[in-house]
Length: 145
Image (cartoon, rainbow, N blue to C red):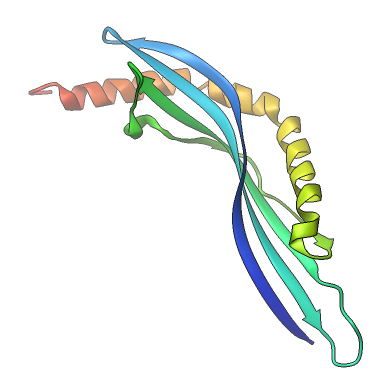
């Protein structure tokens, strides 16, 4: 058997989870949280010498919660990061990946919806972490500190 592979990585859905206002050292910050999913698909086409073969689409999705922070409308890149990762999700469908994309997206959507409470809890639990990170950034920016 000979296999032919085609791979692609596709960014999928970004959905808002939570946002919070944080006041620190007389500056107002806005922390925004969103779930992000990245999907990797691989088209596998087995070739048999004496019979036809059906292509298979194998995929893996990585889902997580990302944080972004702004102050006075300006993004603070040092504060943006992934704060939580879910267990990867994977599967396969008979046929090509273009035709399976709707099924893959639906399965990822169900997975993300089932973990919406966990995503919200991770975002809400991040407030103490933000305060500590802001303290660290402030100490770096203060002369002699």
